[in-house]
Length: 264
Image 1: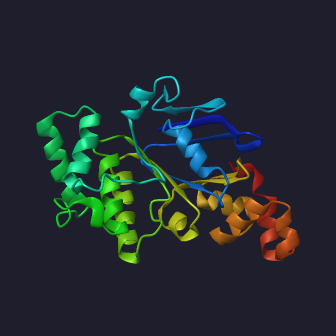
Image 2 (image 1 turned 120 degrees about the vertical axis):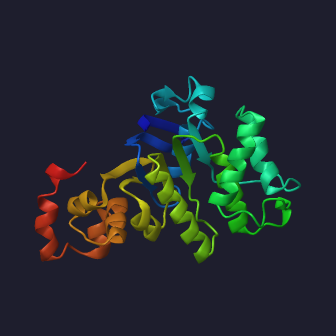
């Protein structure tokens, strides 16, 4: 599992992440949800070791990523927001290179590459150079590259950005397969349709803070709203929600008033 405890990160006078805490369990998809600038990407960069937190801790299966980065990264597959491939390498060569960086032996690595080519439907592009790939094709290679070492924990930062409908559907099937395999998946997004379709648990960020956390049903109970989009807007806006949207309908007030005991 991935455990985040009171993570803090400041850039000059800007507090990007402010005491963010949550856990992501095995066999579940945990959505990290928030508007642009909420601190999602910065939080994920601390989880996979690109940034060191100013304070707090992120652990991968109990290993502190800041203190033991190499050991933690062996247990983690990360698809960052910057997905650059080596354009003069083929899809297969891009994946092979990352497998070699992880220290995989030649024969097991080649078997793993063949498995990923089949799993991600990459047969047509496996031996083509990446320079001419579409966004969907690039995404497939980036995902294969991130999980070539078979990590138990996977972090995906807005993986559907720029993809067409068919690529999004294929990616959703793949993410669900990771969950079915018992892996821990953390998925960053600001697209409510994505979160609703995939996530078992949701962590909502706004202005660098956690403003809501729980299952979709728990967050509906917490806010007294049924639409996840409205739940997201209310949690993000806080007190400004009533100013902009008016008071809750009578049918929702009771749910909001009694949600405290069951909310995260």
